[in-house]
Length: 97
Image (cartoon, rainbow, N blue to C red):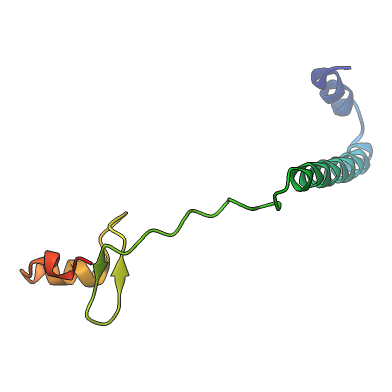
């Protein structure tokens, strides 16, 4: 049975039947998704890793340090504290680490 067949059969049901069927389908889908997640986590552990490990971006070293200990890595939008100095006409290279 294809997905199109399932949808067509679903459309033929009365609204009460659709509601009941929908609840059963979503519960079954959620259970299948949870089972698959657990299976994948077990596979990840068997390879010697922890699930979720490596998701975080590595911390970047500070390229600029402000007078009050503020830091900016030089990536993304310029830090507001450094932008204020630049807009005031200061040479921001004096804050380079």
